Amino acid sequence: MNGAPLSLRETLAWGALGALAFVGFWTLITTSGLVPRQFLPSPLDLVQRFLHLLTSPFAGATLPEHLASSFRRYAFGVLLAAAIGVPLGLLMGWFRLLDDIVTPIFDGLRFIAPIAWVPFAALWFGTGIGGPVMIIFAGAFPPCLINAYRGARFVEPRLIEAARMLGTGNLRMILEILLPAAVPSIVAGLRVSAGLGWQSLVGAELIVAAAGVGFMMVQAQGSVQTTTVMAGMLAIGLVGMLIDILLRQGEAWMRRRRGLDS
Amino acid sequence: MGSIRFQNVDKVFGASQAGVKVLDDINLAIGEKEFVAIVGPSGCGKTTCLRMVAGFEAPSSGTITVSGKVVTEPGPDRAVVFQQFALFPWKTVRENIDLGLRNKNLPAAERDRLIADALKLMNLESHAGAFPHQLSGGMQQRVAIARAYVLDPDVLLMDEPFGALDAQTRVVMQEELVRLARVNPRTVLFITHAVEEAVYLADRVAIMTRRPGRIKEVLDIKSVRIAENWDRFARIEDVMDQESFVHLRTQIWKSLREEKGAQGV
Image 1 (cartoon, chains in turn orange, brown):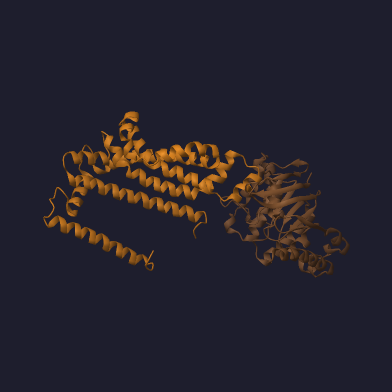
Image 2 (tube, one colour):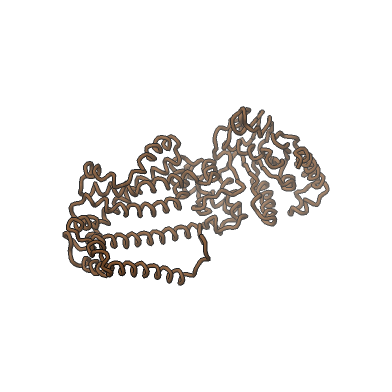
């Protein structure tokens, strides 16, 4: 990167300036009358609508209730992705044959956007919990698998040799050597997975018929309530940021504990 | 128990036609409880010799037997001490030493006893709960040696074990290894490029040629050590002052120098 590193205070100041400029420009456009309100709600309208939705129900629930039901699906999907992706990735990293069998299939499937699975998700797993969870799973799965695989595959060869010399069997090799060696890579993968899973949420909730932020946005879109749609976007953005910050903290804590960073 | 035998061992890296021959007809027999050091110019294949005994690599032709059995894969009967320690960073000192014992399915009480012995042997008792990154290089190599000794292996394979240590620590570890060899003698194959180290530690020193590596000559150190009674000295520098030591060292140096000369370096 070009330019000298700034102090935390300067970084925050410049960040705040950028945000302020963004909101200012946005306000300018909406108050100038160039764009109809319906087309682009003003920041003030958005904040008012957001605050309103926090306590008054829309499409059958308040925004926190929608968020809670979204988060349940999301947690299910991401945990399922981790529960399958991490062990499978580690096994693929140790057993060459499994790697050769799974990799071509996986490489073919992983470029399909999660939202492309929507019709099949609804068909196969229904519109209750199953379908949406599958779409979030489709978004969150690849980084879990890839990072566990890479972590296991690129363990320092000396450590594998040392473990083999000590008479370590396959199961113990995977659990006590590959898994801990891959932890930094796995944790980084989980963070990416958590982000991609949350991004897949709106797609997942296209097919939901009860509650959720995505559901709320689809309902609002149906009645051309653009401010409500945008309030949903704001909620998704804020929660996504929160998830990312928490997971970054977790990752930093893990790296410090491991002695990887001082 | 505890012998190593190289019989007509060749090693070629890469495809056999276009490959690079690194070892050429290695023949060497190491007896029970004998300490043999291999010295040679860098790239001569001395580490490859050790890695084949460990079972990490297979000879291209010829056989390697340990205690009469042909080596096919790594195993705890041939404990390795690596130059870069190769300790598991997520395991404590105790857990690093314990892994091999758990793999042998020994009962907990016996493991505890063996670990306590190994920790004591290497003066590590106060560091049992530490993680490797909290220890100095010298301490880490002590852990790696303890981890190897605790397996009660037929043979001990040491691949430039002190190469990554600073000069002072190195001397301490060399003296430590001599002490260990007296308390608990083992069959040792020791790889090094440090001539003094080889003469100080080994019963015999095998000198290798440049690539493709062959065993050029094998020097008997043990008979000189006994005749000159080096063991009366506790410190390496006192042994190194002995005329008999200097003579052997110079002899090996000259032999190695010829190899470097042949290489044009």
